[in-house]
Image 1 (cartoon, one colour):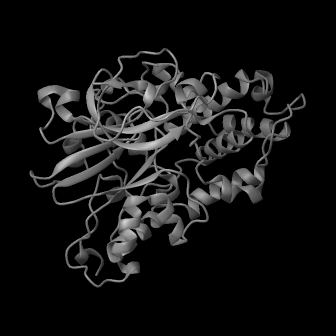
Image 2: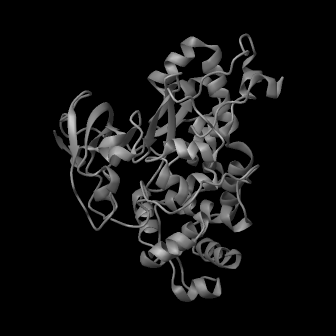
Image 3: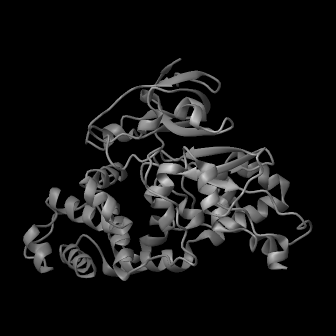
Length: 218
Length: 191
């Protein structure tokens, strides 16, 4: 999706402003928005890529004007409503008036330490990898209207395979409910000037983590 | 947002989807247990133990697990090493991918539009925003975390720290130096 979330290379956002002694959360609800999202993810109702798509699908003006955890809270509401897990009437009054759906599992206190570990997205490879380190590749010039992890600034660019990172769940299909469709993942290295032209400093190098369907031989 | 998120949590708990005690346990873990102190121990160990450093560069997930600081480490943690010729910087231009297990939750600036937009095109300018001036001869390599691989920067040890204990070395390691937007503290800052 060519959305506002795909920010690499954009101008006009100003300086980076680090916050000295930044707290983990800036308001109590921020921690809750994060933890509810994690706990609902644990039930298996949605995948990490569906949640990423849920942020990307927020209207651009909302995306830009909302804090990080506000986006998480808005996404939670949207996903809960879209999946029929609760009704807008219930969220409005803050109480359930109907029983919940049966979900696969529920996060308990005892499960919390293990749930803090990142999930594994590696999967058995359905076929051998097409590329190997050192191969020159070109990223495809694709513009899917749905979730993808190929950023705009790195489309139609020539780079070199630096490393093979295993075979993983393919975000582009899992996010739209078309299955895990495992794909080989590569670190692809680009010269800065291939991405940005002469405005890049000559020594700059940038890599992305690219799934095989994003790539063609160059 | 406080009332809105509370309403959501109450409804989801009443529906039987979530357990409020587990919600509180997650929040407590991120506020008190998971944070850059874990990554700092990893870096300090790599500075003082060449065999561990080799293992970390070869497979950071396995190496960090073997260190025993965490019960489990997710797949595909990758450590990238700074040298006098090369400075590494980590970003997620598309969202907020970050090595949570070893650095905790990302700071606001990491998730902000200014960082995500400029880190890939003008990393030296971004470093200037952080007050970091690299030698002109040091090239910059930016890693855009666009998949489920996660990156941590292994900075160079500051001068004058030979023979320091791992515990003391860890006090030099800032969160930002493990993202690549900072450098470790100087030995004189913690002596």
